[in-house]
Length: 240
Image (cartoon, rainbow, N blue to C red; front, side, top):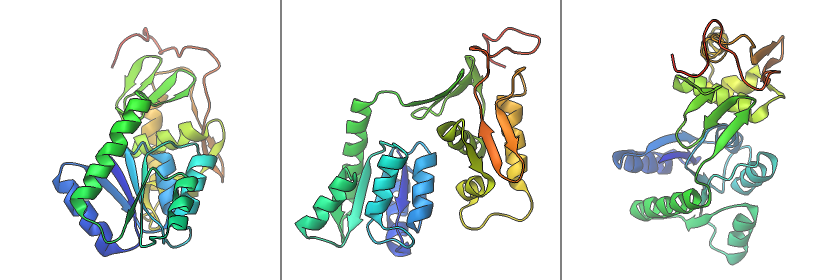
């Protein structure tokens, strides 16, 4: 499973990460609600572990925005010290799929996450993003344009997901930098380098280009005007 942990307590987050990674799962972690919402909305996670008490945006608000503003159905398990029924009702009405009170046992957390993911896979056997003839399967991370498989590095795949979710609207440079590097982007214009790499893979073999640069704003992804992309100088029914 690919799991996002949104937890301000570094000790708790580290324990979850160490335990689940030892079990073969892939983990990302962030310590505040706004950053957690951005990551959860831009990546195809199998599940999210979300703490109630978070800086900048608390768990229930993260959940509401994730469900209502972004329409993301990813299973979410909420962690909280709150034990009152009224608090649990708030969590579930905000969009939580499960609720675990602190302190908790790590094996139980893993079993609950596995159950949530299994149920979600039963509801939706294939989740795909689609922009024109470009598709991205969020379960397998397989990306194709006009049937041609795109071989993407992880950073480029994250950028592609964000651009596809927003298309045809723009995604700002700040949003994309935060997606890749959080609150501490590196010096220099490394985002331009990552976008160039994505362009070479996504647009390079095709006549019509999908990635557009908006000066001083960011980037956006637009569908080709033709229903099927055309490779330059060759047919489009094979892989590179």
